[in-house]
Image (cartoon, rainbow, N blue to C red):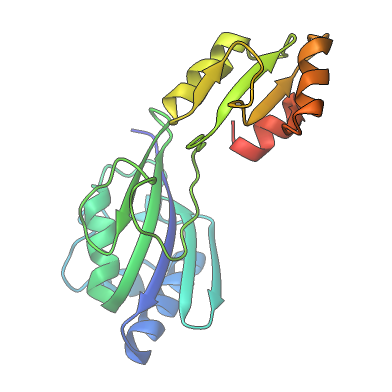
Length: 207
């Protein structure tokens, strides 16, 4: 089983919990199995071993802790990791989990209930790691490297967007590849519709 990449924002419930999370970070960085087992008093990380340890990124803003780490090849359930964090003492927790084996995301927001979608749920700190074309009506023109127009169109519609084949005032974005239709580009400029090239489009929408 491939690993799961975690991006977690945690608001500890009090100073004691805050110190437990700091101890967790240090145990991860120093590969201190004994300390990790001490923190895991409820034995939620039942497959805990050296595979858990690895690179962990952490940052603290006020009393909000952001943790980014990969569980490597561990087979333990994501709910157990979330419940472990809750057991350390959390007031709020938001997390995105990326499963490298299938390329899919799931989310958690103040509970151990899995959320399949970022959009439609309430978030204070976690940013959307997925493309979001909500309220976007996109027209693509020209030839694209790596991905075809059909690939881009599928991603746009998959993530709540609309694809147009003709320029109109309904279009909110024009994406140009090589040798685009210049009439479309000119009309987009006349209508003040934003125009992006392929690189700008991929970067903005995380494609």
